[in-house]
Length: 108
Image (cartoon, rainbow, N blue to C red; front, side, top):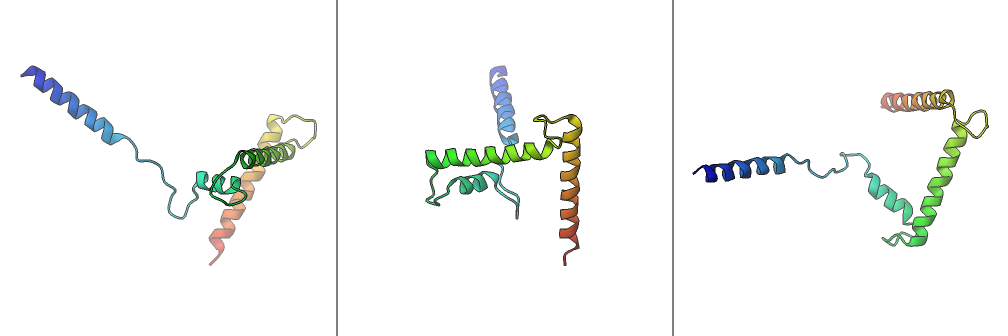
């Protein structure tokens, strides 16, 4: 009897854990699906597939954007970003985001 009680308890415990797993994430209503957006950007010929060449070109474009972002943060142009430069850049982006959000909330 104890054996059956133990097995039933374990089965109940494992079924509870299985039910507690979060559901796969889906984009919020009206939100963006980052994976789909990235796929569409990489699929430059819009054939529904990403070739090796398209993937490599997409990575190069992302690298160029990252370099441009670094150059923006490196305000003194010394090839290094100090904590102060990073903080100033973060504040600039925060202000830009707040301004954009305020503009969108003020539109009828």
